[in-house]
Image (cartoon, rainbow, N blue to C red; front, side, top):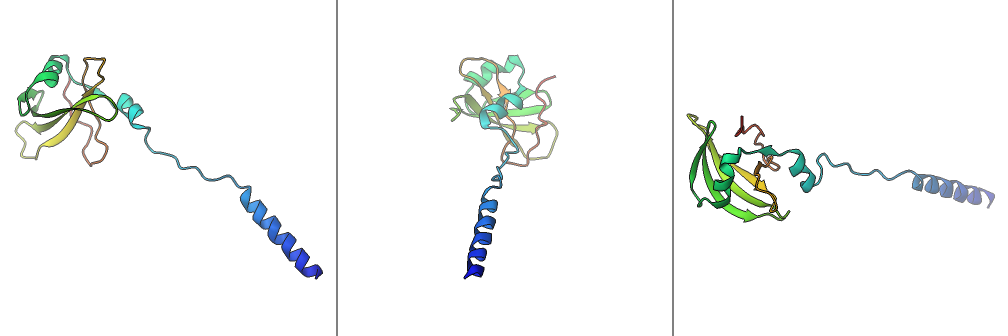
Length: 128
């Protein structure tokens, strides 16, 4: 009988000591979407802002070393005004990259959004 009390005491002590360890918290490799947009933004040159706002779908632009085909203009879930576009490097045989540019409704500046769910790189240089 004394042995069973000792076994219950040891088992209870082990269970309680296991419960006192801190729970491991997951750590995100990226911040929430709102913060990512602010951190990863890439300003598009001002002379193209008006066309991003008002140009018809499938309008074509030449920006830097890229041929740009404007696609749909939409309101994103984060409240930003965004536009998808296809970018093809001039003289390249590679396929077009579909990218997104966004602006806050209260601002006129457009920013190239970083790719988040693909293997595209963030090296589309539209400015300087």
